[in-house]
Length: 482
Image (cartoon, rainbow, N blue to C red; front, side, top):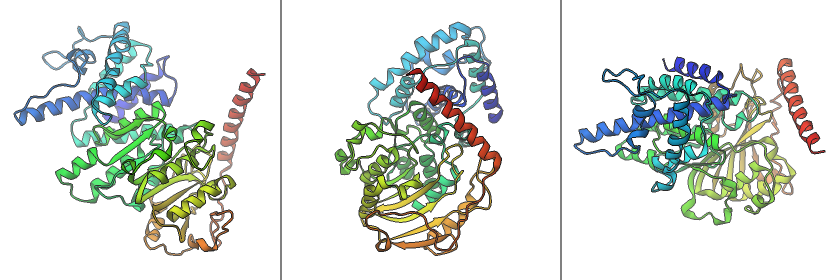
């Protein structure tokens, strides 16, 4: 039922002139789902309060509640078509009354970690792009049939939402910033092995995949007490996100997985001077996949002791600084970090302040559409690196949309990493043996493994076409300024 509902929503949105891409589909679906979730949450809290003999005060005023404006019902529980807004009346209400009302919550909220603040933040950052009130009416009717009240319902909806995020990632372009392959995230979480009571942070949170998987991992790690549940809900997960759409998707993803008021701040992490980070600002665990590309402005670079325009290198400085002493990290980064001359000072800083104990080298195609090779850096802060254990993931197939990375591919890595054992795909390097002038940490398998698998010709042609289109856009842009 849920899967068909999502398909129906997408089919309806395709017919609307205001939405044109997978990014628009998920953005518009998200705000409607959020309001339905909020309505179900209020109903649940009202029932819980009644059972406890208490009163519950609704967050949303009567005229803006779901059952009033979205899908009013008759006494028999059927849609009241006499009262249900549609067409221009519905669009007028949503654009000029509902959204302005919900935006005000941000200013009136007690703190950023409340559901009220999240309501205000979300509706300050997006707008209703659905141009037809009739299209919106159809979507509201579909969403009204979805419920967020049982754990099974939330579980199924969360998986469907994840699949929509995955589609965005597979769409190429900048989709990779929203979606990190879940088998990879699960593996990173297993290796870092967070504990209940530790704080977990992602400063480039995107769709919140790392925090969601860490939440699932911790829920399964032990039988949770009431106190454990409280800690996981309010005192474990923290994040920042610069882009509006990613912020909204991240919040919605965490909500669907069971975190009621995610501690995600909508802010540019790199705009913070890391010299201002104090002990109270630090975290026990950092899990992140900072943006692969990007060139930061000079004023942003001034916030960091090691000046560089490369976005990911600035994020890595931030992550090192914001970790507590003894804190653990699992960070995705382009493999050029290991040898890039511009990153020499940063590699030295990492090795001197942290124990970079593991480097996982991933094959090309791990990130669909990203066109880069990546490595995962696993490190602990507080003691310098003496030895690095490398693992080179060599697969007998080309990775891509039809043959993505899976957990079985990474099983050997997880097993060998526990003891840092040598194998055809793994080896150790003493820091004393690397060049102290360049701190080159390149992956060089001494066992002769890692022969590159030839890429599929269709994949190569597809990438050439994509690059040609990008080049054409760049040339057109340059032409306009001549």
